[in-house]
Structure formats: structure tokens, C-alpha cells
Amino acid sequence: MLRRRLSYAASEVAGQLVFCVISFYLLKFYTDVYGLSTVAAGFILLATRVLDAIDAPLWGVVFDKTKSRWGRSRPWFLWLSGPFALFGVLTFATPKLGGMAKVAYAAVTYGCCSVLYTGINTPVTSILANLTNDSGERVTLTTFRMFGSKFAVLFVNLTVLGMVARLGRGNDQRGFLLTMLLYAACSLALYLLAFRNLKETVAMERRSITLRDSLRAVRGNRPWLIIVVSSFFFWIAFIARISTAPYFFEYVLHRKGLVPLANSLDFLSLGTVMFLPYLCAKTSKRDVWMAGLVGCAAAQLLTGLGVLMGSVAVVITGWALGFFASGAAMAMPFSLLSDSVDYGEWRCGVRAQGFLTAIGAAFCLKAGSGLGGALPAWILHAFGYVPNVEQTARSMTGIVLSLVWLPAISYAIAAVPVFFYGRYERMESLMRSELEARRAMVTPVRASS
Image 1 (cartoon, rainbow, N blue to C red):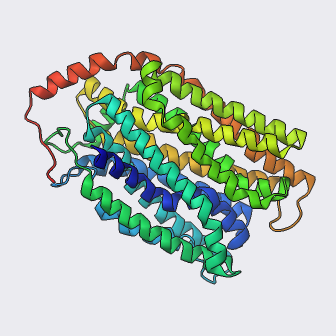
Image 2 (cartoon, one colour):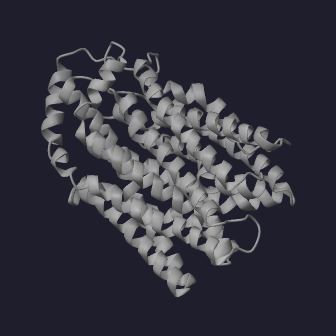
Image 3 (cartoon, rainbow, N blue to C red):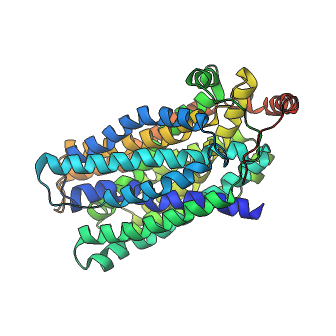
């Protein structure tokens, strides 16, 4: 059981070694290293997420149709880990191109990397429904996954800028490329480890699931809809916050050296993640989820107060508390998606874990991340941001709006639908007992090793 939990964590580390660099540093890389305009960078980030509106449901259908001796979700770790690692590197390559050719290269490489991330990250979520039927164990596995995620984020933020400087020797373009080569190689190895050790043990349907079946599992699946709406606004807030951080600490606080430390504080989210099984058992999953989102919004207000006071200490305190609260706000939807898969099966007889998790996890993360990166870029442009120069009071106002108030509003919106989740959580015991009775009437089909 421990090997399964650690391997599940490894699958998340693998993805974050590449995607964390994209989430935290791609906007700054595009504008200040590769030389794209803020408008072009924002367009690329948003256009790629529009692409996800198409590719995430398609991936979901493909996953639900997958039949292999390894199961439905597990084989994709093997099939996509290499291409994902390759395009993770190409996204940070800087060929000598000009004008629209440079924009096109950035858009194509990042677009391919994004599509492949949807393809390989969605099975990390969808496989959870087939690893165990036990709701408590799912929360525990999600906790291990979040530990893996935060460990990877901490590692990247503590090392990436130093490695770029060391390997680039004054050339940040070369430094980013060589750094991503190392991270991508580690990502590939960890995905292959997860493929080897994770086994799908929950019975699967014999027939492939059609798109019509998948849409039946969505129709009337209100807990899934709550997860989708809340997750979408959470990721807008979270990515807007972290993608603006390099600008904020360099130009507003004039403390550029704090960027690695500030982003490494994401590790504090484990302070809530490690207690999720206990907190959910003592209160409810809805209450833990709601508390995380409200805490994130409150932390943004404290950060804003620190800016008004001109106090770096208050800003860092609010920044740290925001990461601390985000642990619950981020982890709970990943765990609850498996419960929404059960709800869809209970309601209409279709277990469409691929389709439901592709949209509920990958699409929300990617679409929310796209807007979370694009909106700050456009705000910076509207307020007159110019890279690598002393900023005006107006451009610094745009940076503060992007880092403090855009995330605060988005976190508050994300909390609203969660309020209505409780009634579906109370149905879980009845729902699972009925599902177990149904499954006992059919011959289970299990994936082989």
C-alpha cells in the first residue's frame, strides 16, 4: 500500500517538474528572456487554454475508450511521458526568429506541451477511481499526491533560477534550456516508475464508453458541476498570483532576491494537506474545501494591506498564509472528482472517469491557468508595463491589481458553489452501498499487471 501511495505521489512530481516552471515562470520568460510583448504572451497563454476547451473532452473520450492489458488510465503514463518531456524542453528553447515567427514558435511548442500535459495529467486523476473504492483511502492517496506536488514545486522554486544562472553563465536563454533538459529527464523517469507500480484494481465495464455515454454521466451530475466551476476560478486566482510574483517582488517591493523564497512558500500548503484525512473525518469535505477558499481570499486582503502599509513583513505573511490555505482548496477537488465519478455511475449507470476528470481536473486547471496568466499580462499592458526598466506608479498599480485583487475576487467566486456541495456529500454512504450491490451482480474485469 505504501508503494502505491509513493508511486501515486511520483506521478505528480513528474508533471510538476515541467509544469511548475511553466506556471511560475513562463510569462516572465516570454516577456523578459525571449523578448515577446506582454500582449503576445497573454494571447499565447489564452489561446492555448482555448485549445484545451477542445482537447480535454477529446482526451476524456479517448481514455474511456482505452482498452489495454494495463487498464484505461495507466498505459498513458508509458505512451505520453516521452513526448511531454520533449515539448517541455522545446517550450523553453529560443531559436533566433523574428516577428510573427517567434510568436508562432512559442505558441506551437507551448500548445503541444499543454495538450500533452492534459493527456498525461488527466490519468493521474482518473486512475484514482480505479485504484480503490474506499473514499478514505482516496483522500489519503490525494494527500500523498499533494505532498508530491508541493515537494516538486519547492524543489523547482529553490533551484530553477539558480540553475538557469549557473548553467547559462549570464545567458538566461541557454540557462533555461539546459535546466529544462534536466527536469524533463527526471519527469520521464518518474512517470515510468508510476506506470510500473500503479495497478487498476476496481472492476471496469467490458464495453468501451461512447461520447453519448460520457455526456449522460455529465447530465444532472451536480456535484461534478460544483467541482468544475469552483476549480476553474481557483486556478485563475492561483496562477494569476504566482505568475505576477516575479514582477511584484522585483518592481514593487524592489526585492527581486525574494522571488525564489516567496514561491517556495508554496510548500506551506502541506500544513493543511497532511491533515486532510483527519479534518474531513472530523468535519466534512465541504467544510474543509470552503475553509481553504475563504482562507485564500482573506490572505489576499492581508497581502494588499501590507502593500498599503509598505510592510514587506506583512506582505510575506499574507503571501505565506495564502499558500497555507491553498493546500485544502487545491487538494479537495482532486479527491472529490472520484466521488463525482461514482455519482455519475450511480445516477445513470456509466462510469466515465476519463471524461469527467479530463474536464473536471485538466480542463479547469489549464483553462483557469490560461486566464490566470493572460489576465495579468493584459493588465500589465493596459497599465503601461515595460520590461527591464524602472516602473511608473501606474504600471506598479497594474502589478498590484494582478497579484492581490484579481486573485482575491476569483477565490471568493470559487467559494460560492462549494456552499451547495454538502447535500451530495451526505448521499455518499447510500450511493456506494447501492453501487457495490450492482457490481456484485456482474463479473469484474480487472487490468493485468
